[in-house]
Image (cartoon, rainbow, N blue to C red):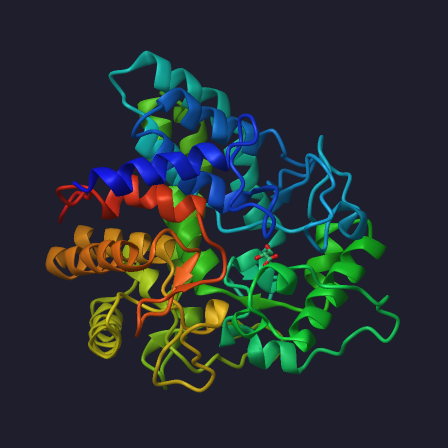
Length: 429
Ligand code: DGY
């Protein structure tokens, strides 16, 4: 155990606390982000379980009337961030928010925080159970189309993997709105522009926001008629895992009334996995729903099939071969994009850097599926990179250099909950 880094991690979470919720990092991301908050709760619970539940309660407090839990909850307007609440203009919730969601890791985190022998934690979980059911239902209703059974997204930001080359084919087929108002990016004032998405990508991101805003964030219209429809292995596998964890929670909380729906979602999720299988790549890949075209690289989301408990023996074997091939190329963990594929950039946001939360989920899935050694290597890689560079948003997987935001909440949290621990935290199988 590294006492100095443990103290630093706790200090970062306290510094980023804005009163019941934690921002990812000051200035660059000054609001509550959805999956950031969930991962942050895993760190908070190591020293303050009550505060960890509060984090999740505040997140659920932003739920919209249609069931969506948004990617960002804007409790204030902050000039440090663009695009803020005045651009999104989504007032379908109790607090102003974005009009898209983010990877639903919340149920899985709730399960980690729930001790069946502890009435207090069960009561906290019970209070969030129905809102989480509504959110999962929302994904099945508004993020699946008639043409594709897998969970798809309408905006790269919703996947959490913003500028991953996974979206390049679909984005290439999309026009920038000719009436897009001019705007000033704030992200490149706080971070090195060479590590952030390109201007053209931002124009396309904002074109989708304009469409959603002009349609009152009607999610049915956004899905069917919006500029983008891409099936995402990240959202798909994370939701499948979250449904399995929600089912376990239902049993712990004696919510048998919810089980039939959850089991139905799990079966549908399992059946849809083949839609994401790119036979040429021998990997699970993102897929443009409108053209059927696959992305052509192995991303960190491709590796989540173990975490989801899905795929055939053969698909898993191929996935493992990719993980090993890529692991041999990097010095630190699994990068966000395949170093052998076009578009790899070791320091540009989702085009290559190592992300701690992706490595946590990949390793968890590997440990549960007979690959404890590989999982432990990933944990120790993350530990080494944090010891080398500090608590960055993400890291160059080749050099270990920290990239983009510093003093980052989920990195601090996953240090406390996983990388910095004396022993692996996962069940093995
Ligand atoms: C950003 O602003 O870069 C965020 O990732 C959007 O959610």
